[in-house]
Image (cartoon, rainbow, N blue to C red; front, side, top):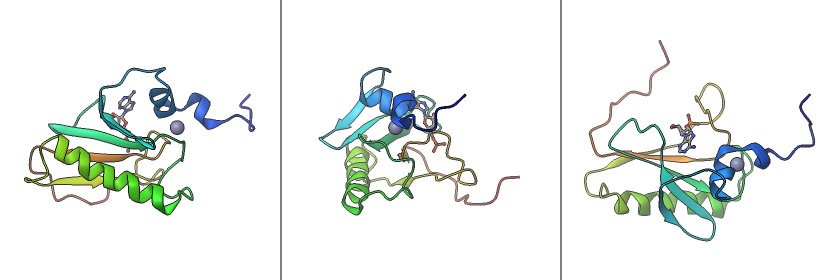
Length: 123
Ligand code: AMP
Ligand code: ZN
């Protein structure tokens, strides 16, 4: 049975990446954020930016300065990946309807091709 007192960071995939328990291809790192390549890229540039501390999503009472830092780092990642001039999309999914699958706040940096306009409901 699940232990309600368990720390979600213990089993969280992205916390395991931060701790070096799972492999990743790191693109950018500082004291508070880590950026690494998405394991299943959907476009030529698909990098994830996360805070090193565990927050379930952008809606989980994340300190404003940390949330701002994650987005600021995402623009640095876009420059590192060479899409700052051509444009890109920053995306963070929240909860079930937002199709969030990893419950650790992350911003997708998507680019390297022109993206669909789509923001529509699922079929
Ligand atoms: P989301 O649907 O917004 O929660 O996106 C989660 C993203 O994490 C997906 O694009 C996955 O491909 C990616 N992902 C899941 N596990 C890993 C991992 N071990 N390393 C890198 N990316 C991952
Ligand atoms: Zn986590």
